[in-house]
Image (cartoon, rainbow, N blue to C red; front, side, top):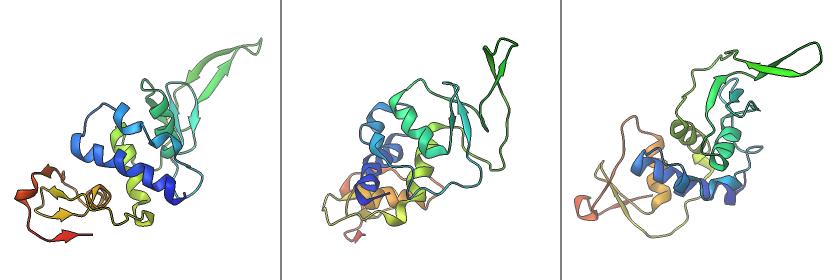
Length: 170
């Protein structure tokens, strides 16, 4: 994943932190250009079958497809398989669950996982657009704020800048 690909995830992930909403439209405006072949490391077997009856190699590929098709959802983890009749006509897709890894089913959690797994390689730059966070820290920009959210188990919210101490993290 090159620097441009990584930079595209920052606004997407910031929106996850800020809203935690189910509206993926705004989060996906720039995420469709992500290159899932480089930089993303799957945790175990992430094959999954989606409602379009396609098997996705990992969560990153699913996120890209979800950003192009809002109605797409995960049917199950593991590959999609099909049954055919004697005339070689496809009848149905079997639902087989094969998962060696406990994976999040929520698409927002999946998007967050993909971003955070590559966050160490993300250059945040020197943009000075401070964001005050609910942990009392003032982050230099949305990128630093998004990275900070990767290391937390609780939600990191944006507050008015007056709520933060005067130093900047990042």
